[in-house]
Image (tube, rainbow, N blue to C red; front, side, top):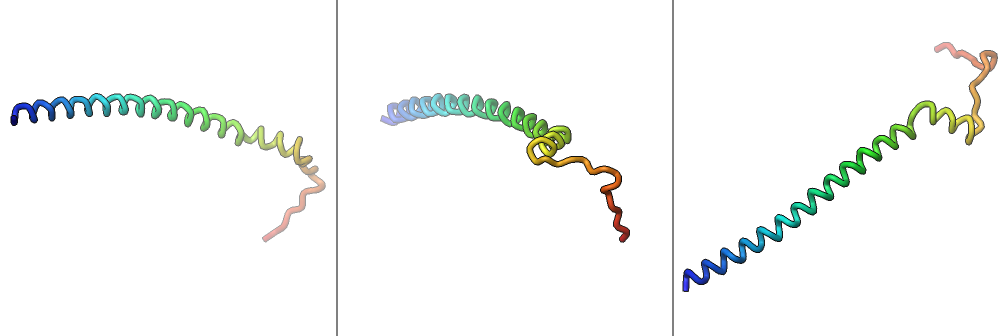
Length: 77
């Protein structure tokens, strides 16, 4: 009887190991996918925040302009 129960236990544990290994493989694939997406997002964020892009948006969408030298006023502390 003990041998039968021991055998069933081995079968059950082996089955659980297979299931968990499959889940581990899926999670590793998702981790890799998320790391790639993170890298792409970091590149996009750095491109969006580049000084040239900020200047172009300020000039184009906000109508800002670089002040002329005569328009600059220095305030002494």
